Each structure stands twice: as C-alpha cells, then as structure tokens.
Amino acid sequence: MTRPPVRWSHLRHMARSPAHYKYNLDTPFQPTPAMVMGSLVHELVLAGGRDKFAVFEGERRAGKEWEAFQAENADACILTKREAEQANAIAESVRRCSLSMRLLEGRHEVELPPWRVGGRVCGGRVDVIGDLDGGHVCELKTSNSAEPYRFTRLGLRMAYHAQLAWYQHGAMAGAGLDVGSAYIVAVETSPPYVVTPMR
Image (cartoon, rainbow, N blue to C red; front, side, top):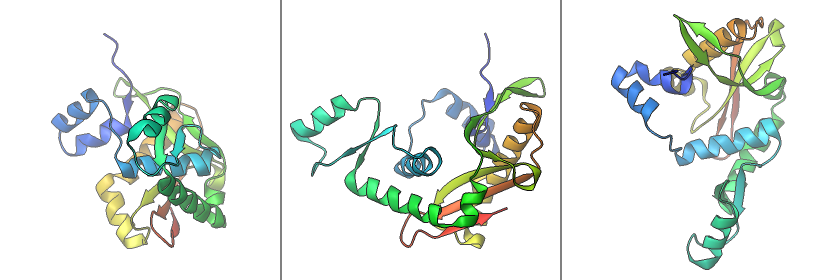
C-alpha cells in the first residue's frame, strides 16, 4: 500500500499526540466557519476571484429558493450576503497595506514538488513563494487579533513557525529554491480589519 505524502495540515496534530495525528489523518476534513472565511479571503486576495464560492441572496437558508440554490451550486461553498461582504472588507484591508501586498507578491497557492524527510514522502501547498530577501515564503492568516503580542501567542499555539519552516524546507528540498525568509500577513476578521505583516 502506498502511503500518502506527509502534509503539514495533518502533521501539526502530532504536537498533541500520535492519536490526534492519526484521527485527523483518517477523518474527513470539515472546515469551521472561521476556516471558510479564511479560505474566501485567500481566494479574494491571492486568486482575485470567488470561483469556489457562491453567495445566497435569500433571507433564510430554508425553503424552495434555498434548495434550488444548493442544487445549482453543489460544488461550491455557499455564503450568505453578510459573509461575502465581510470577506470583501477583510480582503480590501489587506490590499490597502502596501507592505503586506509586497510580501504577497510572487507565485500563489504553490503545490510544492514532493520531498523526503526520514524516508517519508512529504508535500505541501504554500500561499506565496516570492523573491524578497533573495527568496521568501508567506502565509496569509485571518484571526480575531493581529496585534503582534496576541498573534504571536496564537501562532505558537497553532505552530505557525513550524508550518513556515516546513514550507521553507519543502521549497528548498523539493523545488530547489533558495528561500531564506518567512513571513505572515495577519488580518483581523472584525472592523477595522487591522493588518499586521510579520517576519
């Protein structure tokens, strides 16, 4: 049996226990509302569109209108008008931050070529690979706080530093790129949608 590549989205659960890792490896992924919002902001900022999403303009998610809309958009993530407006406001805040946009320049949503760690095939998809500092990786993160001290504590809990190191290693070992710097662009999901770029 061929084992799938080790990916960060699963490996990060090893910090809790091997049982958490195995559970997340074997269990179908169900995104939380916060993850859906993060994905939409990624799509708006990095891909410039909403190909994976559909906005339901109706008043409530019930009845014939809702069922027809669901059927027409079976392959899309369905958002309310309010969720779409929120995501657009967050994305616009990122676009207004010139430093953040410089960090987000480059190739977007890059699926790294496979590489090996300890004999295991590894994989990953990094938000941005750019040329800042001779080569950099960058992740766009939505959060309830982009204040540096609070976000750093969140980042340590979520192991963002390890995620970035994983992508740096993959870019160098898998793609042969010189990637010496790693950044995060953090943006808050509530007004005034503060943006903080961090190295």
